[in-house]
Length: 102
Image 1 (cartoon, one colour):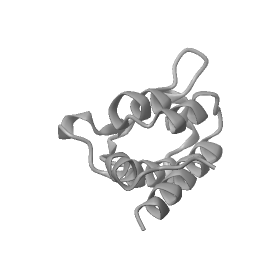
Image 2 (image 1 turned 180 degrees about the horizontal axis):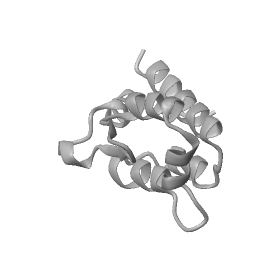
Image 3 (image 1 turned 120 degrees about the vertical axis):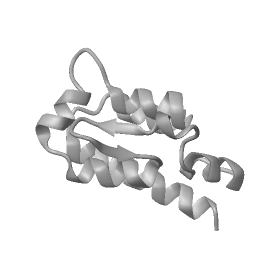
Image 4 (image 1 turned 60 degrees about the vertical axis):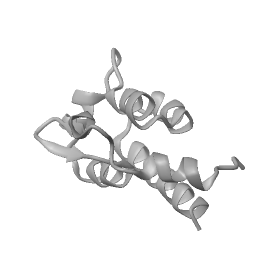
């Protein structure tokens, strides 16, 4: 199991800065942190998911890598092609990070 410091966990869970780097799901749902990102993934339609993840791009993985900085989660999301699986992976990561803060 991966060892995560409290500082790293807190950094991955915080709101993104600057705010304009938030993840904008197609149709205007916004995620400013991984918890909101997980919630968004659970509620978006299949069409919105496919807008962000297709054979050419994976906006989810790219945002997690480039904005949040969590390369572990980004790698896991890179091959996901299913909305429910993506939501599960992000929620599991949030739970892991929150546990590291205790």
